[in-house]
Image (tube, rainbow over all chains, first blue to last red; front, side, top):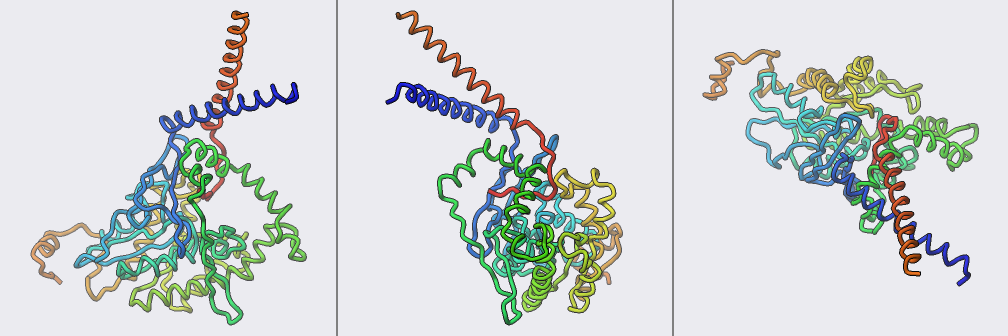
Length: 391
Length: 45
């Protein structure tokens, strides 16, 4: 060996060993003293990437605040639910994205949990049970497939699609994640499922990513940072294959808007109709909660929340404009939101209070008398105790 | 000769300890830094 190369290669080995020692030391430190967002996912051939069931991990961490994500056997941030409904219960399922799953807050502080609490404050004959059916943070395709594969087995009475301006998440061109399911429209005008691309999580690199807290902590910080977002935007604009392929479009943002209007909008509206059809075929009520003001970056310049409301009316879909409440909360952002813009417990409570007041109107009145918010009277308590209906 | 050998080993250990210390400090600074969080970010592994 050359006399110069030898010492260099020895020092390279020494520095690699030093790096390993440093990484192992900091890994131990992080495991002992630092809360690390460490959400575990599984891959499902039909539903794509979802929260791993029965996990206990930090779901959200920011300076001075953290929250533990607890999932049930279905992989939802919710308490365990029996397959069979209990007698005298009315079961609601809420499908949505990260806002519904609420991994930044405790189970009892998510929107579905608050909905359950508030809706039971109306004195109804039956107990209302609200299941959180949001696993992960995808759009309408995952919600529809989640109902078909999991939700319907739990015999819901009412299904809520919590729509969060999900247009860009519903097609692969703008959602990008090929390990999630998407839809497009075939030549015959019918929805066509694009199944999720299998993800091999058994390879060494994936296992390392799963197990190293230091890696997760550093990757979380990188991916969460605005500077990283700016770099991605720069990459999209410089190297995106779409920018050049569309004449007259100068940036990825323009391409995204174009494809949202031309593809995501019709796909989404068809998906909502499909969701309604599938749910109502099971004899279940379908309700759309519209939770986010449509952004100009997607379809907001052409298709507004009012248009979506008209679409729902025209298709006999019950519609609740939750976005109006959210806009109110946006004016006092620090009080109601976490740093990553998801609502905190107070925000979820306000949204659920507003949504619950509207949602309760869509519950059947034939089996129970719906009363206004009132404290239980003595006769109510006696009625519940003795089983005799005072009305 | 033996003394020189001991000194060179000691020097080697000191240099390595310094390298490890700097690396640990660098990693800890990264771990404890608080970046400006972008909205609606989903970190999936």
